Image 1 (tube, rainbow, N blue to C red):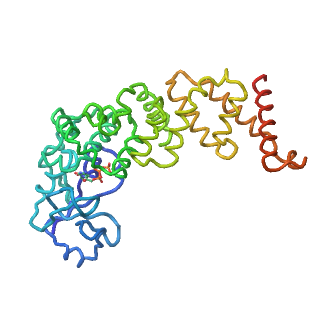
Image 2 (image 1 turned 180 degrees about the vertical axis):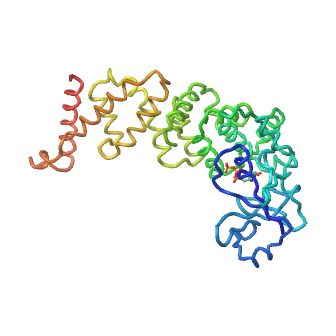
Image 3 (image 1 turned 90 degrees about the vertical axis):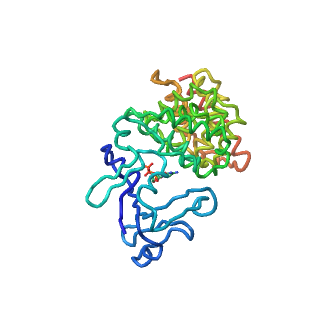
Length: 365
Ligand code: CTP
């Protein structure tokens, strides 16, 4: 039995980047050998095991990554006869198809190191097409490594285009796609992810609503530069779309609630925020009520951030104005109204009236 470090751990060490989790590859072992050594299988028909002490993933060398049953909808052929080269050739990118043994010797049968040096994201073999999710993965790696000067090889882009045209991207589950989208959005150049999806014809399959949204990419880039959280980045990406399109994208990828909510709110109120300084107090109040700024102050902050990102480096004077308005409305006390004997709907109306007065004063002041 031979054990190798594989994939991202080797790639990132060679790039001098921090290695977060290590994937191990086991060549020349059977499922029984793994059990005998105390490894725990992660699933019934998937040849991956967890180390009894470290909890790290150890996969048996395998071929035939076909769609079907098994872990995440795949079937595999794992056997002790599968060689290191046979396993590596079925991986996605050359830079991900390297292995390293205990002595630190790197095995690189498909030119991963040269591609790392030349900053190229290149598929290893036609087996790339076995998993359409790889189209999103390549776009995500392009977003992550863009600051290092990486780009997608022409032939790889052509293969991605073929996969997109085949319609197979439609078969990806919302969960698998969202995981890639989420990770890509959190990279330092997330707009590159969208650009690569566009260039490969995948965007019109996955998110046709975004096909004509070039200026949202600038906002997304800005959001990454300002280390904004996921929901802000998602809202920036969807900004300017019709409500129906926002809803469709939210639902298609089953985006987390926070992301969905913020995208919808930005869609509905970004115009109001941009015009904040001219907005009548009643409209300002309506917006603050809708945001429930009294109980959800952070969501309003995220909203302001998403609106500000669209202005680039120009600055967003509306931000402080909106914060001030929220503070003024929030400063209205409920207690005196309750003490005056109000309750239920009457209390709600009175509170609204007081908040409106506070906003009128704020606007004058
Ligand atoms: N892999 C693949 N095709 C996929 C998923 C994974 O070929 N659809 C292979 C690649 O060799 C990859 C390795 O499995 O390097 C580990 O995958 P994963 O942990 O998802 O990604 P990493 O490459 O480690 O990258 P990241 O830093 O994004 O986790």
